[in-house]
Amino acid sequence: MSFGFASLTETFTVDVQRAEGRPLDVPLLSPFTIASSRLEGVGNVAVRVELRNGSVGWGEAPVLPSVTAEDQETALAKAAEACGVLVRSPPRTLKGALGVVGEVMPGHDFASVRAGVEMAVIDAVANSIQIPLWKLFGGVSNCITTDITIPIVSPSEAAELASKYCKKGFSTLKLKVGKNLNTDIDVFKAIQLAHPDCSFILDANEGYTATEAIEVLDKLHEMGITPVLFEQPVHRDDWEGLSRVSHVAQSKYGISVAADESCRNLLDAHKIIAGRLAHVINIKLAKSGVLGALEIIDVARKAGVELMIGGMVETRLAMGFAGHMAAGLGCFKFVDLDTPILLADDPVIGVMKLLVLSTNSQMLEAMVASFTGTMLPKATIVDTSNWASYGLYWVVLLLNRVVAALTLASYSKIIVEVLIFLTAIYACVIYL
Image 1: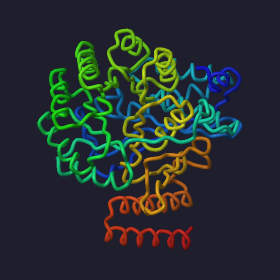
Image 2 (image 1 turned 45 degrees about the vertical axis):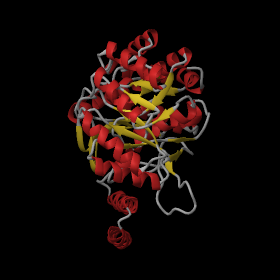
Image 3 (image 1 turned 135 degrees about the vertical axis):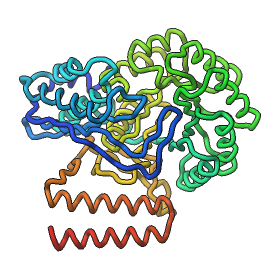
Image 4 (image 1 turned 45 degrees about the horizontal axis):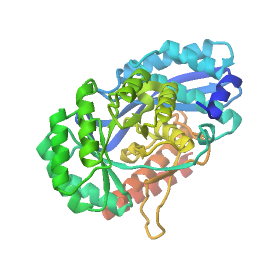
């Protein structure tokens, strides 16, 4: 870790005054289906850490069935345990504080919660010294370009989404596949017609056998389609299958294969690199924690293995932190940090700004995320016990609904949502 963060872990003294985990429940615009699970909404955990100097940091622990080991109730309990230990601990270096968190939640079982607490501590430290996280992690850039995900849906729905994202400026689509090979092929055909110029990533989420994965590549080749990446084609423990698909994909079609679920820790990374089992490693903070992710990144870069950064289904808390890291390090060939775009409401204020790509479009663009401050400058997860804060929450929530209506280009819905939004502002002015 030869960047500013490493030296800060040895020199900054962390003294935690308060820390807590809170439920973070957010609905999705539509169900999010992948080969291994289906989500109707986000049920994550937000972590707040306040240092004795008054600086506050936020983190997020995603909860995704079949991927993370913990459910929300367990995640809240482990977050409370780790937060309690931090508050009771004497002042110590940032490295020591993060070490305490790792002792409370070692290994993969609670990596998601560990990541959330680590994010909050690091964010609080960054806010203390007023250095943006992207600078702390190397300062290569303060912006990134992300793909956009199309979950497992019908061919007609996939074509509609592809057309919408094409109009919004997205050049790379990530397609969730792996539940039904024949349906997946039909989806490819529909998307090819709707967005013929797009690049796309296949993500099977462990759904195929090696034979099925190779068959998909063969059929795509017949259609004249070459994915830029094939992510986790087989079960995470099918190392032989992963190696076979990687070899065929690269030697026959020039397609790279990424290990996602197969790379949950540093040992997995070493195995993948030594055996040349995949060409790309997908970094997700919830799989290995922040420190674990940095270790994997370091090993992969030294070995010349390409990197991807992604996430579970998370708000701008976790995605913002990952985005800062990706922008600051500047070493990720593939960026998949789009899940805040899929949320119906967003209780998070700040973190990252979504920029408009062209002046002739009035749509909210989410292809480019720009990071201009520390992770949460003047931002908060709204405390609904406070009336003023609660009023602000509803104004922001309704504004997000207007944005969602704009995204869907439904003019009648836009008018309704704008009226509701203006009514909410009037109510806040009168009553607050």
